[in-house]
Figure 1 (cartoon, rainbow, N blue to C red):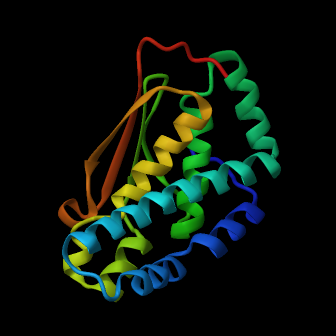
Figure 2: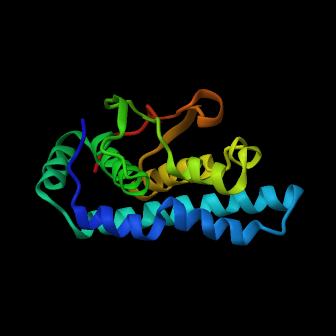
Figure 3: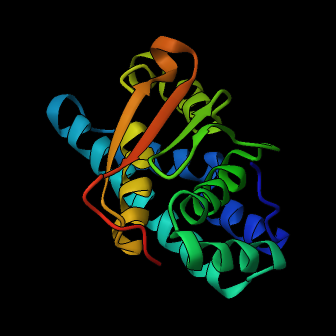
Length: 187
């Protein structure tokens, strides 16, 4: 299932978090670093990026509620927010930043939400500006995992987040969130 998203949200997030702007900041921040200091800085940078991106998506997604989101929330009031409400915010992040038409959702049920990213402008821009050695270490995975974990913490949904595939090795990234079974699905 794909949810239409208000263009104001897409534009605002793209302006703040697009690949070119993000990687340019990263290059400036890391240009003189090597070894463990470089690795720590890359990990911290992408962790903060994922946190900021999701918090911005949550803010804008709530501020610019459209009919689709209102229907999702009404449905969530009956069956709980997982997976549809989280899916909407994950799509806001990826559609905005990556400027893709659709996020490939591989699983979406009351237990799991899985999605696949086949073209990533962040990964490609890192490769272009920082080289294959840095891009292949997939420090950007910290952004993806942090944005998902931030979302679930904010919504008070307990999940286990899994990285099943990474761009450098598999030519795509694949993420799955599994809702913990001992938790009720309430909004």
